[in-house]
Image (cartoon, rainbow, N blue to C red; front, side):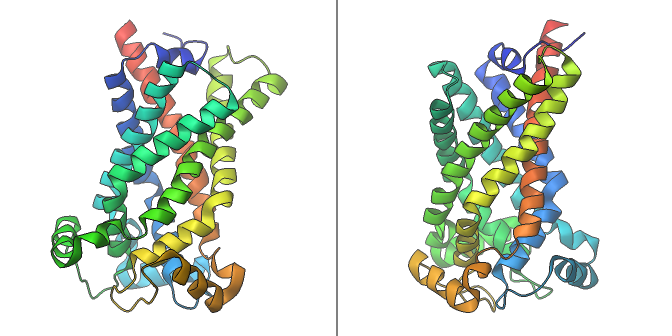
Length: 295
């Protein structure tokens, strides 16, 4: 059976539960594929000097911990991705049905609401994931559950440390992702042909999701660095501060504007890969569900 002409028609034919299932599935699959980029990005963002290269950071990690180190903190990261994917695409899909307005401003606003919901429910897993990635061979935590118990037992507020810069970055990031995806996809249709061809739709979805992820990440990356510094504040041998302004000052003094972009290369690679895999797998999971229902 052929795909429907338009991916939006597929999504509109699905129930809210089916959209949520496709959202969670795409989030889990994306995390499995893209976790190494995230591990390297976090390591570069939280280093004290801010001078290590992507190659050196990756080589040191593999030498010290083996290839498994590239998937460090994967369990908490997987939960984070599933919860975030459910919130982001689930809320976006449901609100899009309610408003039925495809304008750029509406898309950006709905994307922001989706980002807010997803961030609120998934944030504690983000903190745990960051700390698991940050710890070296001498482990403070044995795993995700142990980290939750120890962090919650010492000070539960730590699970939401860095939440404000995360909110300030993830809300517009989510909004920009959906906005630029629709923007680039409209250009794709205008200049390269009608989307009635199944092959054209899926190749367009891939290209536009990559461009969307790259553009969105460039805009919000400095806030992501601030967040990571706050999340590891007081943990192990890492310095940093618990509030936004002192963290910004600390980063500026330790390396100027360049310090806010430490980890940008793996961050952009991860953003492009994540957005691409996330959007394309989400579209595919929706199509698979639709085809199953239609068979």
